[in-house]
Amino acid sequence: MSKVYIILVNYNGWEDTIECLEALFKLKYDNFEIVLVDNASPNDSVKKIISWSKGDTLVSPKSDKLANLSHPGKPKPLVINRVKLTTVATSLQTPFDFTLLEASENKGFSSGNNIGIKYALAREDADFFWILNNDTVVLPNSLTLLVKRYRQQGDIGILGAKVKYYFEPEMLQCAGGATYNKWLAYSKQVGNQELDKGQHDHQDIELDLIIGACMLVDINFINKVGLLSEEYFLYYEEQDWAERSKQNGLTLGYEPDAVIYHKEGQSIGASQLDLRSISKLSDFYYARNKIILTKKYFSFLCQITVYLSFILIAINRIIRGQSDRITMLIRILRNPNKGFEG
Image 1 (cartoon, rainbow, N blue to C red):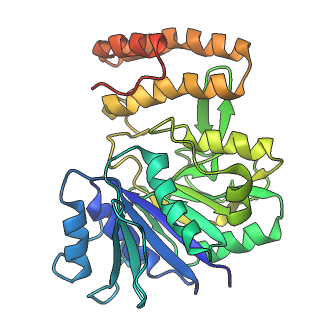
Image 2: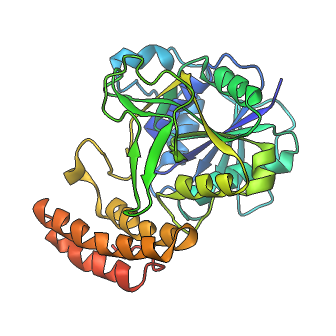
Image 3: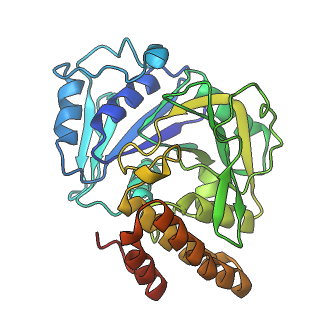
């Protein structure tokens, strides 16, 4: 059976991470290893996760409707293969329940996932890598269905699942991923906020990107396409990966029977259901990375229209009562390569 490394990145979200881990322990797949990367969380995430692994800290599901996916939990104590990345990453020789990699600093979503992928590559036994957000819970058969689909269609680069809202479990966040408007650098998730009535339960949906909350790739994809780009810090990494996948002649796939539930944006203050709640950090990278991605992959004419779209973005922020962010947008236009300043 193919070996799957499940990559999770935690940043301050230890409660969500623990619920995600409990759900992963219930997977009906016989050959997987969980690699949890803590992205230098400034809170006590690592201590809390270790305490939970010993049975000293309890975490309750945030939704009664989905409690059965993560509870009752795996018997404690658990054995953790704990690695601080200031030293050479090694592995316990005895059986362990999951690996905890502790990054020395937070370099963003891609960097955290790449740390996990590199660790798995060094083990030299990886067939697949399942990039999964830590604020998700999964159905027990989800990984089995994803691997089966990937094996059946030989030209897949990135494979996505049906993603539903954790707090509204009958509502779709997306059917695998999104379409992308290159003229405005704007993605639209397929099926977003629709009640799931099976209307997207077919595999031939055309997607321009697979949502970063759930992406399955294999070892050949990594060898051919490479790791996630780390220049974005947050957002648009999955679009970048999708563009490189297509450049290498690989397609984007969707398995509707594999279902995950996503809390969406728990650690960064972002929610598509309430745009006014989007944090300044989230808003910055959404806007800045439009320019970076467009310059990398699309025509000069696309770059012009994306720059012009900032007028609409500015008007939108004023309407939202966020006129203080206009200065931030101007800074992005002047130097899109500069990071977030707060």
